[in-house]
Image 1 (cartoon, rainbow, N blue to C red):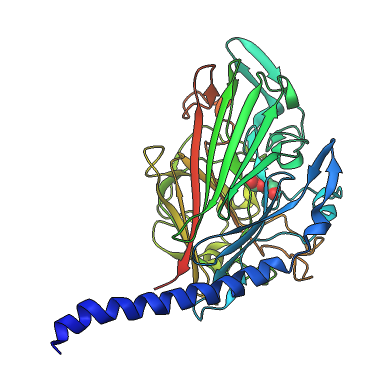
Image 2: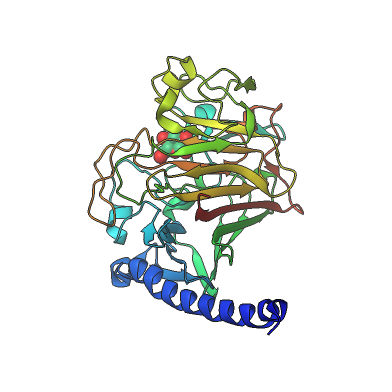
Amino acid sequence: MNISILKKVFLPVVLAFVMAGCAQGNKSVFTETVDAIDEAAFVKTIDGKTTGLYTMVNSNGIGAKVTNFGARIVAICVPDAQGNPVDVALGHDNLDAYTTPRGETYFGAAIGRYGNRIGAATFELDSVVYNLPTNDGRNHLHGGPKGFFDVVWDVEQVSDSKIIFTYHSPDGEMGYPGNLEVSMVYELTDDNGFRIEYTATTDKATICNLTNHSYFNLSGEGAETINDHVLMIDADKTTPVDRRLIPTGELADVVGTPFDFTTPTVIGERLDSEHPQMLYGGGYDHNWVLNNSGIKVALAATAYSTVTGIQMDVLTDQPGVQFYGGNFIDGSTTGKRGIPYGYRSGFCLETQHFPDSPNKPQFPTTTLRPGETYKHVCEYRFSVKK
Ligand code: BGC
């Protein structure tokens, strides 16, 4: 038989069989890992609402677990370079561990109404001064002591791979004006992305800056460090901060500083630098100004583990990303494999507007008015480093 006919007819058929076999195999391997988490340990009544643990699986068998308490990502299981399942998201295997008062770490959580800090916990909008509760010294952090990470979201599982979380935040909640209607679509895409699509509307002028606070360790949750990961952030500038981690309002070039991740660089390489910004943050805890700032959903950052070969691309339409290197994780909390999470054993890439924007008119605005819709896409896409 002619070789080109062989290629055209037989090869696709053989490939289809092989791929179907893999998908079946993968499905059990990857979901098995996340299925080991006991769903019953997430069922509680909080603020009169029922919490639970939900399973997401995509067409390749990639598995994730999420809870409607704080709309938190609890686990994401992806293949390493050898095809073995690795849970790359830090989290707990029971709800009590998320609700027990301790220093709040925001593992996997939805953050709102305002991601990161608002300086002196106050802002002015349309000549009205709003005072917010403090929970970070004199500042307001991640929406306040009972932000979106700490509320029970309404949940609708629309397919195996898609869940919609909604929350009505009443006028005045945590000091913010306006009834805010928030929706977040969580989806495991066919190209192995964990995609979050946020929308929000208000009935009064307000501010809005949502994000997700997942910590990742691409060597597997519980692995000792993320300092050996290689990171690229597509940003030529950061928003420098003062000692209290409030942006000064300037934009600083990354060239020649430990903040230059424009080419892939090992995270730990410059952690000992005496650059004042590194001292303020206790390491990396800063907002990078994305080169593709707010234009369309584009690649913002890429990280990979030199141990597993797992790579995570972060895509977003937001103007900034907070790269937080886990400087405040201190071993006092234990992960799903029973291993305490130590110093810098997880990192966050929180896509967002810049911290303290309501007090920095030169930053892209975070004001949301009636009739407008806040929109934000963030995708964490997993693959194996080529
Ligand atoms: C902030 C850190 C903060 C951490 C809390 C990060 O988003 O940038 O400063 O300590 O959240 O876990």
